Amino acid sequence: MSPRRFLSIGLQVAAVLVVLSLVVGQFLGQPVLLSFVETGSMQPTLDPGDGFVAIPAPVAGGIGVGDVVTFEAQEIQGGGLTTHRVVDETERGYVTQGDDNPFTDQDGGEPIVQEADVVAKALTVGGSVVVIPHLGTVAMAFQSALEGIQTWLAVTFGVRSLQGTQGLAYLLFGLSIVAYAADWLLTGSTRDRPERDRSRDDGTSVTFILVVLALVLMSTATAAMVVPGGTQEYGVVSAEFESENPTVIERGTSQELEYVVPNAGLVPVRTYIEPASPGVTVDPQRVAVGPRGEGSTTVTLTAPDETGYYRMFVVEHRYLAVLPPAVIDGLYEVHPWAPIVAIDALLGGGILLTGFVLLRGEPARIRGRESRRTTPLHRRLLRKLY
Image (cartoon, rainbow, N blue to C red; front, top):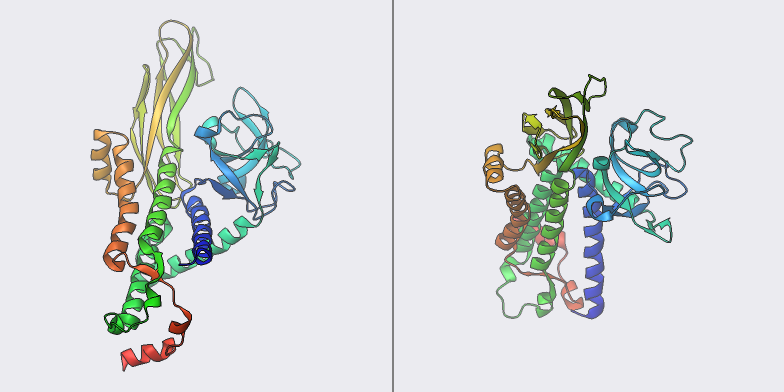
């Protein structure tokens, strides 16, 4: 393969991976390195459809006034991922506002944005957001087409699992099968002839493409499981008196708080919320949340007998529910990272295994000029059928 052809294929594959990562990130409710805005609330910084580099919150460092962040909104447009600028920071959290909005999100009824709500921060250079024009427009068109195909397949075959991110994996498998079947049907009868056009052997390794796709899907799934979880802190004051403030608790007594588990993605999740400090209990500790749904559990905080300020914690582990609940439970008992390894192996390994079995690791062949002078496709198909 010539360097020019190799570069062309590489750029095409990179473009597909970028769009696919954006689409999968939207499905999972977790940006994967790249994200985009759908509305004009951030104009003129970001026009509708513009993309930007989204740095995951755990590695983005501190968040301050002026940063553009993507957070899990509760009220804005019905809830979900929202990208706005931090305009103020209080003891309770962050005040956010779209650059083109005349009032803050909190003035419009959105709760104060907590640290745990922030999933990513937009990359800035010299104080300006790094903008990728129209990247989201392409991703939204691609996403709309995929959703249409998945919905049609789900309705036609009566299988709900063909929708969402899990359905994306099935769709990729199906396209691989169709591609191999078409290749075998059209070229199988001449595959073993010694006089066949050798220019067809020149191509890009399908194995390489499958590995890249598997890595993208695995990294996306891992981010969707790791980033929303983590440690939740409660600042508890053990006091001599009762208070309407739920975290100001009379010493020696307890206070129950609701712990909400949101899921902005289209894939169900299974979460485990456990105490991470003395004076904390959680019941139930396992919560299943459906697509774009919300679950909750009860956290009970017990104030020590000695008055003062105490920090109490719970830790959340989250997993995509693509394995049976009993399997995830068993793996979690071994180690909290064990389900992540198993889920990544299922998603990424499934793509590789299917590719190896169906495509046999053959190169993606590129026809030379001589080989193009062949019978048209429709005539070859008719010959096979009749």
